[in-house]
Length: 541
Image 1 (cartoon, rainbow, N blue to C red):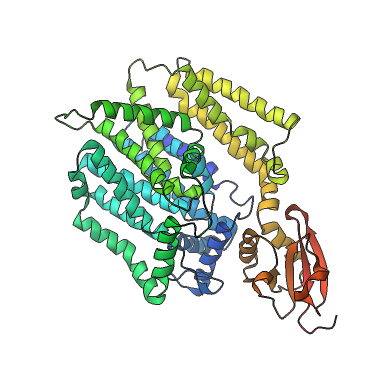
Image 2: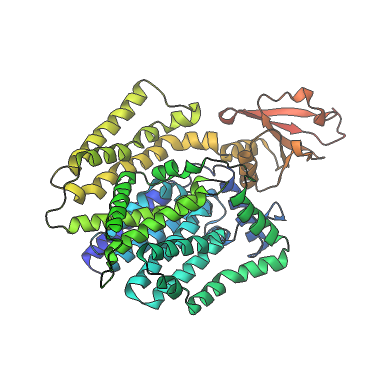
């Protein structure tokens, strides 16, 4: 291993450790999905069942098993915790970054570190690398598969094509048929753009298809045999119905993913847009020419554009939209930008960076500093503050913005793009972890409430909820490792139990508790809920 390789490895390892792993447990699991997926993995581990996902003792067939398998291994190694539940996504993101580095080192030397760190520092990659969910597993498998396909297309080595099929199979185990569908759509669009339709036929390689079947299909067959409702629930409801209808109440306008994609690519949004525009312009100008040999450098940029566009267009057609859906497209933007940088840096004198491009990039790159420094206010007050805190945050962002813009228009030009852009990324992540983690934990996670409730129990009692969010329901389910009853669904425990309700709830007027003793235990102010002890049915008041 050369000195440069060691330096690259240390640099990438350091950034991945900080961006993906550091502070993973400083705030608890957030939202409904994180604790729900973490609990499914725990119940599968407790049952020693690697086939059927289970939640609350019942089959839960919404998602494939790859994340659950990873979380089960993490629990086995580190114990069950929110940190262990987030480890799989962080590992997947790291593997994706390493794969990008190795690909560029082999096929696009000179910007391999830039490509890796651009991938690692995209806002949506950092966010989902810290989340207990399937999205990063799909993005990593799909991303590695796409660069493996291009490695085969450029080198002709079938080992890369085999790797492509393995990765697409893992993507199908991560989130279902969307992985092979998106991969096929990207390749078909690229073949049409370059008028090389034989690539589609050559990609349909029988040994690769067999590899795909061996990796992906056994679980699908096994789970269907054990759970005959699997096809209806997973394929018909959670894939086809989710795409074609608003069954799960995530309606958004058609253009929803345009701003989402712009935010997902921060801090690189401006240069990804510039690279996309330039690539499409060159391709359009040369589309009618028939060179004796294909221009692989231009074709690679066209391929990256197809990769960037296909998931965005596909999910824009869906009637159900969530931000994480377009995570697979982000790596297309990252590798497109890396190739754009490589070509510009190879020019002997280098092209000057236009002032407007430098200024807009600097503004976009430093903008996250403001909410990062004010995250505690934003989370607790649901707004950004005025006065000194806002002035300080804006001043820091302004100084960084000026420094980045001046650096990019100086003689250093694009050679310093990676360095100056990563500074606000590191500062923003550090600010969120240092200044906002406690507030996020108190207001967005059920963990502190679970700890507070446990502190007043002499032994663990059943838990019921009334009128609180799904996020709190699944959070308490994970942190207390018990099925939670809901009064509004008619599930009122007959025995003594604890009850969590909104603080505005008028307990004396609730007919569900007629004839039962109710004792106020505490008030959890950050989320405006109270918790009570409720006696068993028939107990003397």
